[in-house]
Structures are given as structure tokens and as C-alpha cells.
Length: 411
Ligand SMILES: Cc1ncc(COP(=O)(O)O)c(C=O)c1O
Image (tube, rainbow, N blue to C red):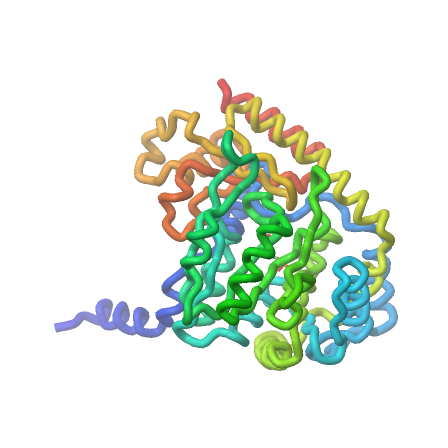
């Protein structure tokens, strides 16, 4: 006979959707909570801890004063749509129609989810490079996609950049493939896909009649002369690409939640419907401020890259000195590291965890620095068990504080 408890347990199991049960809360966001709990230096989540540009903040204040406080048009305020289209044409030489080919969303997170829900049918396959930004896993589950992972190998003596096997990528495409998710510049690896790599991917997309959904949120954070090339600009791709981007990283306003999807009219119509019933719209005054941010002069973007290049060098040195094997990023603001050299777990408190999780917990609790365990970027957690990721989108004081704490790790 069932007890009230077992009945309750049965009910609560049935009350949760099978989809929601398939993924956990974000490990990246959890690391930030742990950093706060342990008063650790937070080098886990990719949000700047320094001020956003004064002009951008002033534009937001002005928009509220001007009473731009009600719902914007659901697919986005006209001045922001115009500014995005104009900037994309300036930087990538591809023209979109602001009336029919853009949707402003609550961050690129929502733009990616809305795009996937708009084009995926249950069972459609989606090719994803691995390691991947952790949101793409739940995005696939919630949209009903079956992900096909293609491994990127870390830099080695033979190949100085993260690389993928072309045959393996080609083999991941087939009659059921609906889309490939591309992220360049890439989180977590820092890889910036080259034109030759993009052309190879383009040829597969054309051959199999597949969308490329490209997350370009780090488009301006580039080092060593690398160039950001949008897939939308490659011959044959304008009408099969969905470009995802947002204000978060370029203007250091991750909390504003303004992002967008650029796509041909047909998928845009579907994206707009999904977006409308998910969120209605992104914050109206912040969209208004976004329009002025997107008109920033080129010098703003150049300076952003210079500032991050210095921070990259600083954190690379700190991590190398602390004993990590580092993979130098060519773009974005993360450093993937290999922790094989650390003899760990030596501590019985963490013995049941995989090495990356045990290491990250030890680091946040005992050393006072938060990072992200490598397993959160892989489908099979074991594949990331010898890696952890750090971010350097932080003030010099924050990086210096991490350096001091790492002295304890060496000891
Ligand atoms: C690759 C990538 N895409 C999207 C996002 C989230 O962007 P948004 O703040 O626009 O939702 C992040 C945040 O870290 C990211 O790394």
C-alpha cells in the first residue's frame, strides 16, 4: 500500500516535465553563487566587474526620463533595429531588412532559444562543436533537437589552434540535420574560426540544406590580428544563416538583457512569434540606449579589444605561474586550462567528485578563486574532467587579488 509520502513522491515526479528533468541548473551561474558564498574572487561567469561606458548609461537614464517606459514593438524598437542593421552592413557587408529580418530579444540567450524553437522539429539533428557554451545543451533539449557533437581538439605542437577533424564534421551532417550551431569567437576555447574553416562548414550547410545558427556575441573581442567573419557574409549563406548577437559583451551590460536574431523573413516570422509569447519584448528604455550604443565610433571597439588583450596577458601569466597549462585564446575573454599537472583530488572532502568539479570546489572554498569546471562544456562530463575555465573580463584589482590567492595553491 502506498504511503502519503510515496504518493506525494509519485505526484511530484509526474508534475515535472521530462524535458526539464534532462538538464541541471547552469554550472556557470552556480559558480558565481558559490563565489559569493565563499567570498572568492569570481573568475567564473563572464560578466565585467567594471563600469559600462558612461555614454551608454546616460542614454538609458535619458530614455527613462523621456518616458520610454511602455512595451516596445514586440520584435524591437525601430531605432535599435535600424542601428543593428546599419552596423552589420558596415562590418560584414550584408544588408538586412529592419522591418522583416530582425527580432530584438531578452539577451542573445533568448534569441538563441527562440531561433531554435522556431526552426526545429522533434528529432531534427543539430551539429554542435564541443566544448560548447553550456546553454546550447538545454537549448537543444527544450527545442526538441538531437545534438550531434563534433570535438574540437586543444592546441598542440602540430596545431597551434583549437581544431576539428573535417571528416568527423562531414560525417555529422545527414538527411536529418536541420542546423549547425557555431560560436565564433568561441566560448570557452577562444577559437576564432578562419575563413577556410567557415567555407568548409558553408559547403556542408549548402549540400545538406541546413541552417547555420551563429552566435557572434564576442565579435569585437579579438586578439593577434584575428578577424571576425560572419557566416552570413559567405556566398550562399545569407539566406540560411541566423545571426545571434547582443549588447552584453560588447558594451559591458550583461544585466540589461538586450540581444537579437538576424534572419531571412520566413524564419524571422517564426522567431518573432516564439519571442512574443515567451517574453513580449526586451526592456524598452534599454533598447533605446542600445540604439545609441550601436552608433559608437570604431575607436570604441578598437579600445575594447586593446583593453582585453592586456587582461588576457595578465591572466595567462597568473595562471601559468600558478601551475596551469593554458590555451591562449584568440578571441572572447576566457582561458581554458588543463589541470592534469595538479595532483588532485588529494582532499578526502572531494574524493567522490570528478577531478574538474573537485578542483573547482577546492579552488573556490579553500583558495578563494572561482572558475568553471570543464565538464560543463562537454556532453560527457568525463571529457572535460581535466579542464577548467577562467574569465579575465575583470578589473585589474580583481585579477591582482586572484594572483595573491593563487600563491596558496602553489604552496
Ligand atoms: C557564447 C555565448 N553566447 C551567449 C551568451 C549570453 O549572452 P546574453 O547575455 O546576450 O544572453 C554568453 C554569455 O556568457 C556566451 O558566452
